Structures are given as structure tokens and as C-alpha cells.
Amino acid sequence: MILQTNIALRPEQKQIDYNSKVLLIGSCFVENTGDKLEYFKFQNLQNPFGIIFHPVAISGLVLRAVNEVFFTEEDIFFHNDQWHCFEVHSSLNGPDKEELLKRLNEKLKEFKEYLLSATHIIFTYGTAWVYRHIKTKKIVANCHKVPQQQFSKELLNVEMVSESIQVTIAAIEAQNQNAVFITTVSPIRHIKDGFMENMQSKAHLIAGLHKALENFPDRYYFPSYEIMMDELRDYRFYTEDMLHPNPTAISIIWKRFQDVWIASETEPLQKEIDHIQKGLQHRPFNPSGQAHRDFQKALQQQIAALRKKLPHITFQE
Image (cartoon, rainbow, N blue to C red):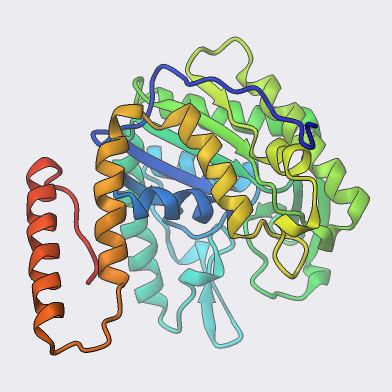
């Protein structure tokens, strides 16, 4: 008896290997995919400006980076004893104005360098709901707990989603013609918008994405949202908040992503790295004992041998 539907997926041609440079931008589901890439030591950069949920905000940061429009005092504001920027996540906030501007512009330079050198760029879109700052009439990436009455809430229609994504990709392609674009819709449910509103938002994202990707050979869609909704349609695959995929669901979606996008010839190296990672996480009963010293020596020899194959690899010990 078959108790589960399965989405038919096939391996793509331009897969990720250990020479690839992967840039991940978007919602908090970026961290789920990015953490797996990081664990297996693929070269990657995740959300340099923190979590960004919607297409317009992502597009704004990409255009700012490729055009080298650096942040100035006009782009930041002081609120609740912190300096903020409406274009980035609150994780970059700080008490010092000059330090924030310096950090933002350093991130911008890093972002542009990776945009120009990335072999694969993964966009993960979380919502089509956006907030527009009434005074400036600009759509923001993050409200930073500024009073709600200073914003209007809007739903991006399918055309706006499609246009924003097309502008984003075109801006990158103008300077990096070799990048492969992988898009996906986050399976995380934005119930704070409402149940029906969340489904409407995801529908607009999916329709807009497919419209933006049609007829372009190096633009791909990976069905993270559909795997969660159709293959894993059971609350046992959610965390306690019933909104986020739990570790089991994340591992299943990652395995499907591996099948499509991670080159099979990397599997032996992934197994070596997994063995080393588990060794580094090992907590001995007797840290000063000879057995543990021998174990550590052997582990360091394995790391040294691996680094001869992959010089860019570093491990946190």
C-alpha cells in the first residue's frame, strides 16, 4: 500500500560540486538549506543582510549591490536606542551609526563579489505580503518594530512578483552570465497573516515565479513548498509551533534537493566530511585519556588529508 504521494524530480545538468560557489538569499528557510551546504563544506554565502522575506526587498538589495549604491545616513534611522535600516534584517541593527553604515557597506561589497563569482544562486521566497512605509512610500524588508500605523500592508500581485524576480535575475545576468538560478518557495507558514492570506500569498509567489522562469534555460524551480504540502502533509513533520518544518522534514527536503542539485561524485567527500563533523562533535568521557588523544590525532590527520583535496575547507573545533 502506498501511503504517500511523491513529486517526480530528476537530476539537473549543472549541479553543485566542491568547485561551485553557492549564494543563498531569502527567507528563514535559506538557513535550512544553507546549513546543510555548510555542514558538508560546500562553498556558500547565506543572506549577508539577514533574512529577507519577499521579492521586492531581495530585488532592491541585488540592484543596490550590482550598481554599487552604497548606504548613507539617509538610509538609516534611530529607533528604540538602535540604528536600523529598512532594507535589511534587524540582526544588523546596532547602537553606533557609523559602525552600522560601515557594516552595511562591507556586506554590500561582499555581496557584490559573490554575485559576480557565484555559480549557483538560490532564491527562497517566503511571502507576497509587504509593508510600505507611508512617509517614504517605499516597501521595506523589515519594520524593526516601528509603530504599525506608519505602514500600509499590501499583497504583491502575480505580475509584481514576476516583474521583481525578472528584474533581479536580469541585473545579475548582466554581470554574471554563468550563474545558474534556483528558485523555491519557503514551506514555512506565515500564519500571522491569516490562514487564507498565507495560502493566497504562496499562490501569488508560485504563479509569479513560474511566469518569471518560463522560457529561460538557466532558471529553475525547486518544489520545497510542494514537498512539504503534498509529500509531508502531516503535522508530525512540523515543529511545536506547527509552522516550521522539523529536522525530519528538513532532512527529507534536503535529500530531494541533493538528488536534483548535488553532484553524485561529491558523495565520497560528503561521507568523509560527515565522519569528521561527527568526530568533532564527540564528547569524550575522559578528555585527558590516551584513547581520546589518539582519537584526536587520527581526526586531525583526516582533516589534513581532506584539506589537500579541498584547500578551502575549515572546521570549527
